[in-house]
Length: 102
Image 1 (cartoon, rainbow, N blue to C red):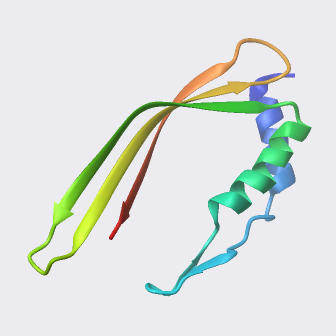
Image 2: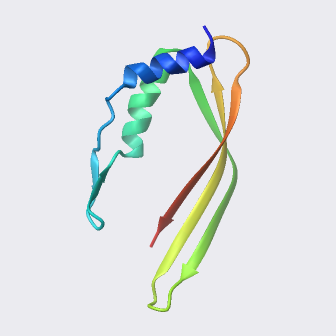
């Protein structure tokens, strides 16, 4: 079975299983935590024989100072995701994660 088909089967299994489980109280919105995503999706991928190995390639943190004395930290992390299935060569996919916090 192709890697794409294995991933599709895992995606179909996850379906609507992901729902907001955390709340940002400061900005008042619900979100799905990374823990929830990793647990639900990771189990579905493993069940269908797919393994994902992330490798950090680069990271950058920028500090932004404001006149009001606040500081914001902007981060970007570049990954290569090595995705392996039961057959064939693994896929290597680039990915960039970004985040900001005060």
